[in-house]
Image 1: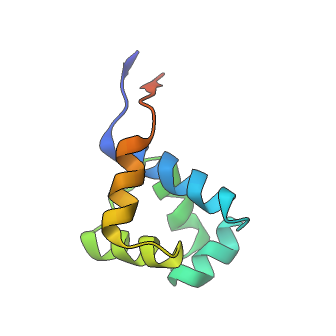
Image 2: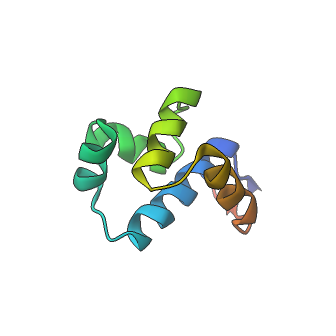
Length: 82
């Protein structure tokens, strides 16, 4: 087992926040202006978003980028099984 990457942790956090908001990936993608396939890759930690993309995601969740990073910090660590 290896340590979870920052991209995986970011993805897990936005997935959790999206689900808590009751949004599907398609609905969330419409809010962000991103394709559902890109959001899926983000949530799986397979894409590295730009700072601008992170801000778009945060705003779509009703958060500032600082609040999003705080949520990522509070997320319990998980080990990746890859």
